[in-house]
Length: 383
Image 1 (tube, rainbow, N blue to C red):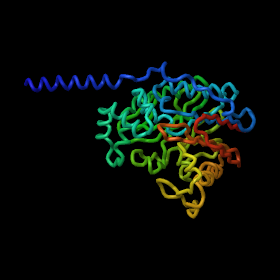
Image 2 (cartoon, helix red, strand yellow; image 1 turned 180 degrees about the vertical axis):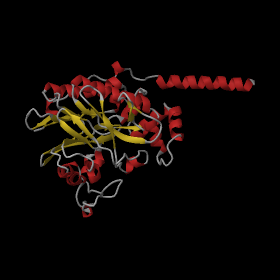
Image 3 (cartoon, rainbow, N blue to C red; image 1 turned 90 degrees about the vertical axis):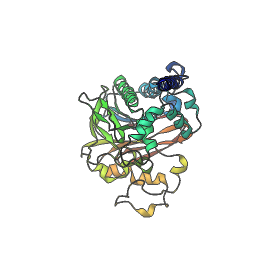
């Protein structure tokens, strides 16, 4: 009996010390970063304002420290929106598009300061998991059957509730503040859905790479868009979305379609889009410049569609494949006149995403050069 009491007492002390260690040196909001300044040269605008609205791609140059807490990330994103607003690029008919995975890095939210200084992603995630051992363990051992990469699954699932809440609050507040429609990039969440009040909710289960659209009142517009064709790197921990989903939204500027990254490469993803869709938004993670200019290795994760010339494999570059087989030509075939494909940019623990932007304007596809250290705002006036 004495041994049991002693064991319980020691265990409680260890848990208390662990919980204390976890919160020591977590950077408070006011100590993190000042608001990012956006250089006027980083704003690109195409066409003229015809009163029909606009697609506005925002590529914030993100670093790990931006994910330290809600206010730090929100202030960073807001600074780009303020810069666009100052140029007259945001109005009630504006559709703002953020990059893929912009919400998923919130897994590093409210961690010790040392996490944001790690040199590589593996070390950073090890530190995050160490500070969330119990949550990680529960998520790992309750991963859905068939999950191949349980460690990655658990890393995204262990803090899903606060991550979902923070992501929802940030983009809801920004949409309401600037009175614009926002395609909030994407976030990986377990079984995401909308409750009766239209609020984002999650449940224990499979992970989906999900894009959420907010209206100018800051409310979520259904449906949630779940990536249908995850690439090989995602397949071990995320689940494909339903191919029958209809990712079409009514906005003040007209009907908007949203496809998440690789989905824009497959005709099936366009088959549910209605004929009156005016514009398409494609949030993407993208690739570094060395990959963009390297020989294309072919379709990743799923079989190439029948209309793809597989002799292009290893003959054209990755960048040329994006222009030949993704949003540009496929949106045109679906009779969608305008589109914007916004790639992630920044440096996340040594992973440099050299974000490009692909802009579709009627029959013309514009490919903007990469940007890594400087954020960018890209505007396309609709007509």
